[in-house]
Image (cartoon, rainbow, N blue to C red; front, top):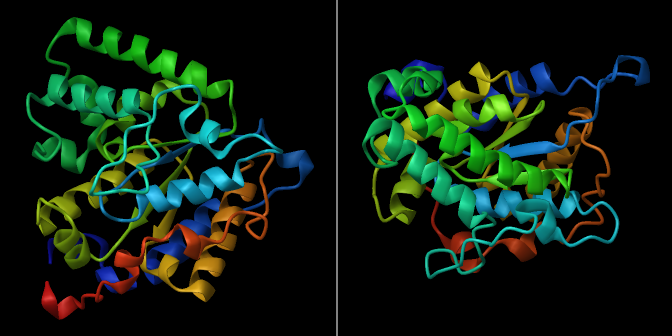
Amino acid sequence: QPFRRHFRCAPPVLSQCWRERVMASTLRCRGPEGRQRARSQIIVMGMSRSGSSLTTSIIAAMLRNGSRSDETAWRGLGRALPSDSANPGGYYEREDVVRLNYATISSVTGAGWTSFRPDHLLRPAALNASWRAPSGRAKFEASARAILGDMDHHAPWVLKDVRFARTLPVWRPLLRRPLCVIPYRHPGEVASSSRLRSVRLWEEYVMSALTAAREARCPTMLVSFRRWLAPVSASDQARELHSFLHCGEVSGLVSPLDAPKTEQRVPSPLCERRPFTCGEL
């Protein structure tokens, strides 16, 4: 209910409400005379168990830029976060990015990634003014610059960690005209799929991601998990995602028709899960 009051939009129709607003404000292709320097940095964030790994794998396939490996587009030369039983297909995350985001949230808030202070939820940029130790920001910036420096050698690139929904404000000064992608999924399905079983955390992370992207002035696209599960809607969404990246001035894109088929990337247990309805929240 708080989510609906805040956004005036029920979760199952989030794509219909927000896609029109987000697309209208960000997908305005300009002619050559209006173009600035090409964008090469894409951030994927939101709530866990919402298809962020799947979405990142599809973006990486579009960023292959010739014959290079998909992997360099999302991890550069960094070590990949190992897969596990919760995500056997892999997380499509750099291990050092995840560790840095965990450490930053702990250093700034004194709590874990699932605990929000009210001021950080309503205004994520407050994180910038909340470092508990003076040396914390300097250590963060040194680590972040090393990561971004490596990724820039493999541009265009995509970095994914759901905790960017909280830490984007401290990364933003080091980024150059990034684009943001926020995968979303019905909160009941997320709670059912997650060990945390928390609809409240879904609400907090989705709100924080949307607010952080707006405060950072990042062109943003919302991507529906459910639309990946059917071939027709998956193809439509892949084309929309490609258009978003193209109109966002990302260079060297591979056509979604040339990328591996979306349905081959969706684990079968996710396809078989029964959808939730609003009445079950």
